[in-house]
Image 1: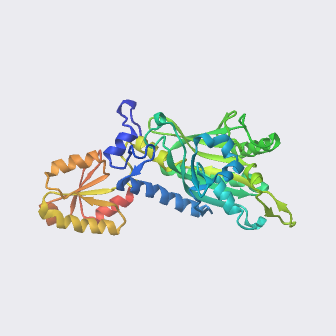
Image 2: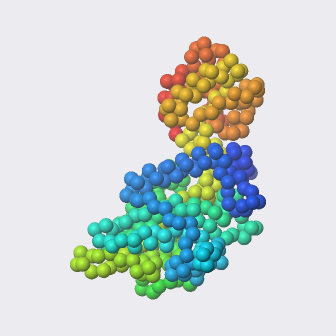
Image 3: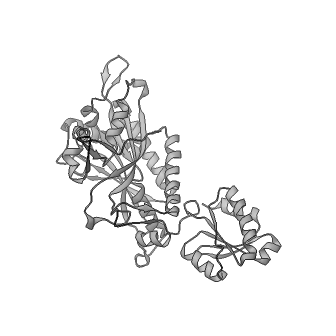
Length: 398
């Protein structure tokens, strides 16, 4: 897929045109999802859940607001408090979470753990809030409230490389679904790092070892690791060749130590696990914005919020359109009918602007033959098909 830069429409304009999301002065930087936008979001989340379940993750949900002292303990306060929101409840200071890691740690610490349980893979679609300057806000790309597709893995030292290897495979599996190619970057110890140089060296070696064993190309980004550990970042390339940093894998020896995480090893000794932080979409909001600009709103069939738009020529054809809609919905397709009292040419132009992948025109001839006239977005007339032929055609597409 190739789109010339001069033809590009921003995701904000596409979001408005396709009725996916909106913003409001009542909540700057906090997007409102319209019904079609929620369909697209749910498609992404459902895909996320299916793939994570298959990969051995357990889904969790942690509170959006926790006591300030938790963030002081985790280290986020020293490195991040200027970007956090706060509240006072019952004379106690709370912070709205900017990320989900401490909540996952509290769940891990909620009971005694055996070495046989590890690795433990927690995954969370965590709503987080970060204060961004009003001038930096940009549609869904730069927001103050967003949902990270977070995961936190608690592993034994001998499991580190194998688990990171599996994460790299899962990242590749996800991006392949959307046809994205990507570049990999290894980010090393920053100046304001937490913990010992020895632990950092060990973590960096583990990440680099996996990349070399998998024989994947990567670049080293010196000094750009997270404050608690080095990371592998994934930069996807869109239809304009632009690079977007989305996925990340971060190896953390620090937070388990700060929260006294432990498990009992085979010799009945208390050992400290290592924590892997990991995201693939990065955030649902930002990934949706990238998808909008990558596909320019012309989503493949499986991603389109409305897959099939039925256009009856007149009121006399609405009943037949309803029958077609019901049969397609039984097959799992997302279908709408345009039953407005408008000329069919106008309806076709409107449907084209909404970028529906498939349009079905029904009139007297179609009813008489028990068929539909099929038009495809950007390709035009695809001829007449009976319902079985149409369903077979849709199943062959993606």
